[in-house]
Image 1 (tube, rainbow, N blue to C red):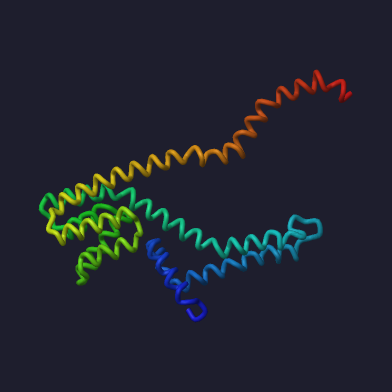
Image 2 (image 1 turned 30 degrees about the vertical axis):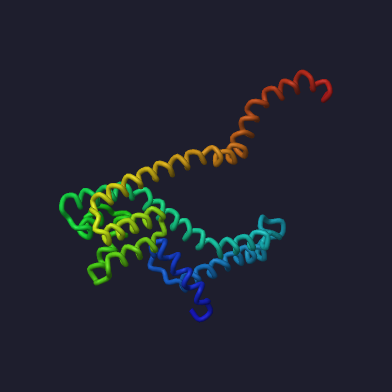
Length: 241
């Protein structure tokens, strides 16, 4: 904490919150993990100094150690960002079904808070845990709209922000909550289908690089080797002799 700027601490706290606080890590501890990764590069330098002349590590300590140190420094950030993306994707995927369950509970006569408690009881996923935290905060005295806004800030999912805004607006205007939830569920389902179609359109582009690096060369070898062997035996044989 003494050597870390306050803005960096706040930014890291926000990222850890977005990731769901994995392992209840403190921001300062996470920064320490980044710097602990740097000495891994020194291991290769030590192996280089201990390697026998002509060995595999002879003269390659710095060449391998520097990228290893850089990777060790940035690897915690990469893993944290991956967890954030995975968590947001899980919430986005679960929202249509979660809102359907909320709608059913509200139409059955439960209040909105009790409906969120049902979602938390039935589902053991990121969306259910987010609703469960909102319910606990409301029970501790926080206003519902404040707790919902805080949930949207912790997730930073566009669909969740839209849902929270609609719920708060319906509460202020006195609109039927069940009607709003049903509309939101339909919109989330359409949005989920659009995202799936977008990912499907990206798939051919993502497949192009591995095809060019791995599949096409192997295919060329399989197809061209027999022809090359025939040319060597028939046409190029006398020249080679």
